[in-house]
Length: 260
Length: 282
Image (cartoon, rainbow over all chains, first blue to last red; front, side):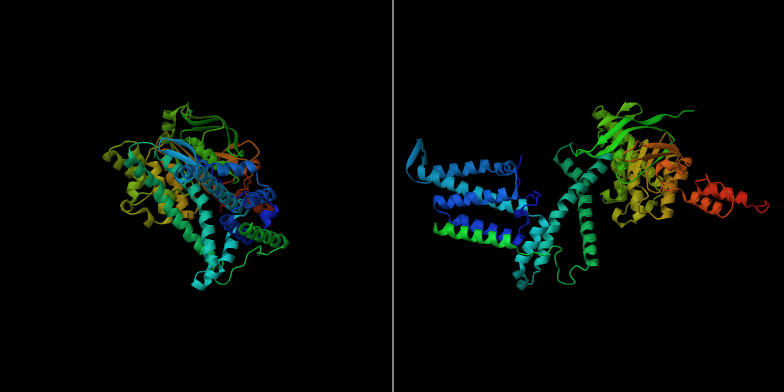
């Protein structure tokens, strides 16, 4: 039902996959800035070409990307409809008190295009970057947080661990469900109060296991010297020629948006 | 006298949805009064096998018969199997959920629609079988020791009064004394009526004296079955040779003429004391 692939990682070893995560985060931010500056058809052409070129370089399956956007079709159509019906301008079509204006339709289409560009641009980042690399990149970029007394490494680790806990919790829930079914538990019977009570047999052990796991994890992290000094990555972030090249191209394209 | 066949596996095969084969063409007959030990390297399909015994998993091919009836035939048969086959997954104590031990043990009998009196009776029966003192019943499961939690969780399964008890690593993480006592209790449970016990364990030697049959699941090959304790001596099981066999080999290498075919500690003790009795010449 929800065929939305935003946030997924699609493994690969392309130039784009190997780019420094900081560069990819920066390029994504630049793209979002560029979106706001586009005015002319030439600028929109560059906006459309940007994710297409990067996706091709990353070797991403186009079908998968399109399906990922497909989940938003209803929302986009609704938005175009609202704009076309409510914004004033030259009337194209009228039925009773409803009228579609040319300017409204155009504005709606531009909004929809911007949202598609926004989704395509930001999903490129998660499609081509592992959660760990993304966290390392964010940690490096969040370094100024240190001035506020927050450790950027801690913030990044917390995000990475939260992502890692999701599949573990799913596994655990499955194990507990099977054990309780073996003892005669049924989740498909009775009214809402009975069902809610039945769910307690799942959630109580599930949450207890989650806190136990978190506690064991914190002990394990501490016994491996977590927090005793600055942390370094196994694969240190290093900017290469490709990183600088794409960063320069991205900057040039962004500047072009505002002056084209 | 042949005792009743409780569970029968016919050409059971299972392939995980991702294509990994776990069980291949397994045939097995489990009779009342038998205790089976299940061994095999990690990944050989031991836990997968147990999940088939009460229908948590459906075989890819083949059938599981409970007293002659296919447990996957319809919903009713499946429910009967869930009630008749008590299954404890690894670390069952992680699944305790009720505020008190007594409530947790009472879960299955209540689900079976028993009244308060009958439920209390079942709880008491299961408590005794699991070797728990009466004062733990009103306590929270979280205040129990590791061994007590394990036994409380097993009591919760025994309370459903199954005919077959299938346990995945029930001894894992228990101290040797507790694990021995638990095995003895389980054996007593099995002797109580027309029941069978199936235990997946890495501690085959420890459990062997209390069991009759051995099933060894092997990756890439068909499973082996054998009669205990002699089966411990078969090299093709791939299990490490029993400690007593290694002892006998060591003694033989030093010129002491001891038998090489006694796998159990008790058997070897009897043999050695006969050999070294003071009234006997070496």
